[in-house]
Picture 1: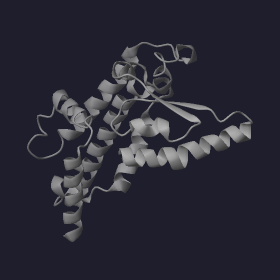
Picture 2: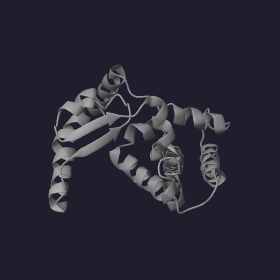
Picture 3: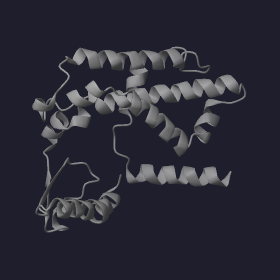
Length: 209
């Protein structure tokens, strides 16, 4: 996500659709949009529509109250990585000549969407519900402690390690929890302009082959 894309969504999708909803519900078109301080959220949004106020949460509050930050994203990423490892294992098992480099070279948006769908489907309703415990505790229907979520996450990490250790190649036979955590944490950082340029150049090189 970039600031340009988000602004385009705000102007051409969010505002018109919310205005239409208000019209259908016969309620005033007066909207308060709360956002975190992600680099992709331009500060100028509050000036783009007189009927939509945009307020940004302070950085020290965002991570503690946003539902998606209460275990959902972390759990989903582990499920997603598990299905990637399973896909690698299955393809290398069928084609003995295939290398990991070949796999990643051929990995496409369709593969990613399929693994995203599987990972998202594995998220339990109880995980989604308890994510609101800090922001809206009255809506919690599943009374359980965090150990249940941690157990599910630990199981997915175990699955990743088990599959990974069956793959041939340096770095897989001794795969451990710390390796998995390092991979997952490396995805938390926002891509810089240089990162995006480098990815674009790699795509151009791939198309030229």
